Length: 345
Image (tube, rainbow, N blue to C red; front, side, top):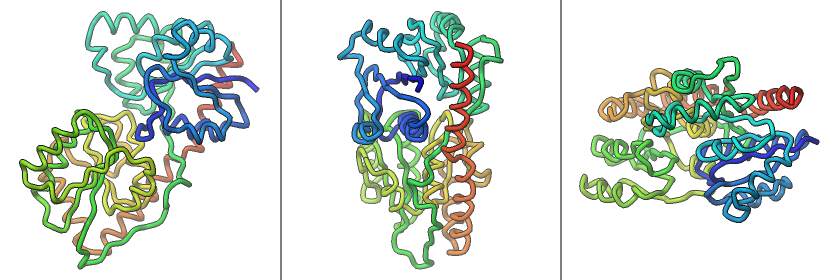
């Protein structure tokens, strides 16, 4: 079998890119041999990857030239995120890159944008995880559009409940939640402010961690809603966390795709998201809100839970929507791309 090396930053459990890679390798284990190289982070999928027979190496152990040696020994390299794309430039092995976000701040610097226009010309195929990501990429990095293709992210739906949820008219606690890094992109501040507008039935559960956690905890105390918010920290069992919720919210300023929302919908959760590229093609129009518009969001949530019937109907709709983003289709499309590049290598 042909050997494919994925090179990326880390394999943290709360990352959408990371979950996608593990799921793809699980489905393609009988088609290709895989290896993973991490440029700076940790591997939190050690047990799953060991069971798949996938070896994981760290740049800190191999050194730069050791990484290039392993890449050169592969039949195909698939690179993700910065700085992996820069490292992959130096391999002689045919390389595919995946664009996971519509905007990277580094490309606001003219020198970097010019440099990446050179780097990307070396890659055999540029996979974009949504039409919006492709559009923004081509605006910024002037490459032949024929080199690009859109492959939507997918979710291993079997990991999630895939059952409708229900609430009762007199339910004492309604749990809202979100999964994600504590970073400015995710706009967790707005979710904390949201809790000042919702009545005492509502709790906010946040799965994630990061440098901004102390700031968010202080904001919750300042707004006197800290008794209504639970900071769970790093959560290893995301399906179980989602099962504990009643409503999911993705309040991001931007997303490449929004895989966390698909996971929530696959858990039967009515899900709200900001009306931004990467999310507005995944979430139903009536469940979108503008970034920071917590007034509108609070009204939408109140309407949703106004009757048990409306809630159950939206739970069923979420399950139907999630079916569109099965990892099986994503895996099939990636395999076709791998086969095409390998054929012409």
